[in-house]
Image 1 (cartoon, rainbow, N blue to C red):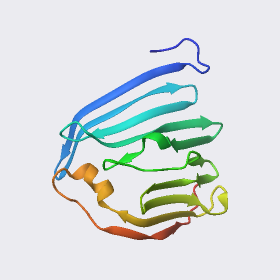
Image 2 (image 1 turned 45 degrees about the vertical axis):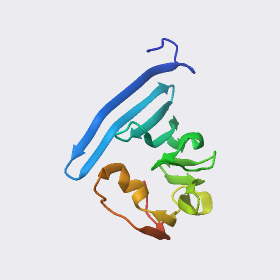
Image 3 (image 1 turned 30 degrees about the vertical axis):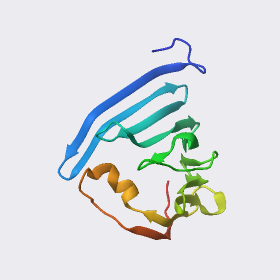
Image 4 (image 1 turned 180 degrees about the horizontal axis):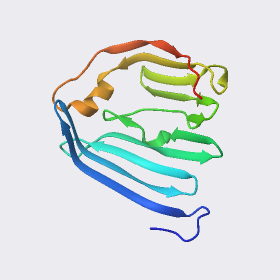
Length: 166
């Protein structure tokens, strides 16, 4: 649907369905990306279903622009990784701008497992703290591996990324 009025109305609804992505040891069945584009924002729903058509992974969220900034946020009500509902704070954002990256409250968690991405000092271009707590690698690798496990194990630790982003 293409709207003649831009402000607040949907400019474009989109839907992409791929029966299977297959290459070597990577196999991803039933990939679906749907959403809409409104003025300055893309809203998306990304899903992967298993061979039995059961929802395996889902991420919904938005990518919005304002001035020279692009803000990425996940919807906490629909975050599903490897059949499990994960939590993320409502006010999670990763902002990309000419003066750097600012990550705030980007903390995915399920039971005792977590991945966090936050900027130190909450300033653009500050080092990024990426943390892993009891994170099972299979949570992600099961997305692409079908019956073959590409990688497994548990990650604990923290990485500090210092870079000049502009």
